[in-house]
Length: 308
Image (cartoon, rainbow, N blue to C red):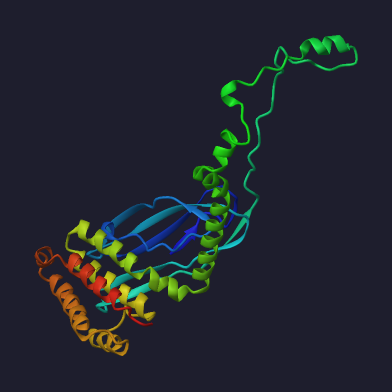
């Protein structure tokens, strides 16, 4: 369940997006969702809270993740859909819950920088009025000072030296370089927005490694399930197929059809089997370091350039 605290917001005003996950088990160990790119928004660190209770002999509860976002531009905007993959013990499969995109109305404009007003006049400044004489004005004019010898220039002096300095031209071209870089970045972001499949595949390894490192730091009885979840989600992103509900034989067949190396397919099967076995032997995953094994496998799979 994902809800923003408001659907209409001013530019540079904050809104809070709340994502709530409900179910049974240890809610404290749930990882945060994989957030999308927030184009046109400034994002802040995620905060979370959880609560649990015993109901009919089972531990049930919920965990809420809060992401503070600030819109940078006015207009009709859409917060992207969010996906959350979890293990369903009833079916012993991984399921993915997906929210709907959320329409937002952003109004107003970013305040322009303005110069501070001048509140006073220096004591030696002449104030021109109808009754001020020319002699009085003349008395207020300060005499010109001679230019110091060190600052006097000629065609072959300091000015010519400045024009020949590389740093001068670098500083002169810097605004154009910044503008060109900004344009190139904007064009790159637009290409990614037009190719969501490519974006998903491009971010697959980064997302999986992040989740595996979180599982490695957690290092408890939920670690094997988190490792399997991260590996299956990675394969789904690279193949652009829903892999969360696949059996291991079906997943192996899908990888063969994608021309994945047979040795790597076998390693995928082996790690998933170890993760499943570790559910019944809680100390096994500590000895095996399943997150590290999965990260090594993902690096090898990514190097093979799996086709979608």
